[in-house]
Amino acid sequence: MIQAVSNPPAATPASTAKPKMNLNANDFLQLLIAQLKAQDPTSPADSTQFVSQLSSMSSVEQSIQTNAKLDSLLSGLASMQVSSLIGKQLSSLDGLTSGLVTSGGVFDGAGVVTLDTGAQLDLSKNVRISG
Image 1 (cartoon, rainbow, N blue to C red):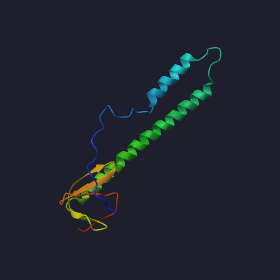
Image 2: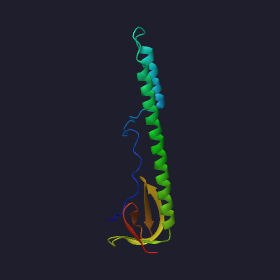
Image 3: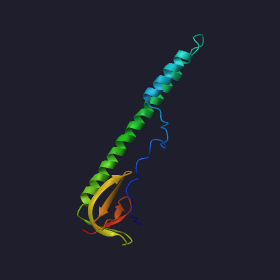
């Protein structure tokens, strides 16, 4: 069912934000260099392991870039969907919320429209377009 959604939450203060725990390509290379510097010269690490690690890092980096591009594409599509609904009459499937779309935006990847009644509808749920 359609539910009215509130505005997106305010930004989290820096003092309560969780630290980012993701490694990027530069972090990986720094770890790899540190590992090379610290290895025992009489018993060097297997070069195939390094190649395997580099290959894995490359695959992960490409996956991260692909996901970012897909997120951007989905956000753009949601934005186009919202803009195409301006001026149209929308209602929730239960009929409890309805009105003329006056504005909208994209929050957390989902299109949200504001009606002339002040109510908001999440377009990721099913809505009925009247005109």
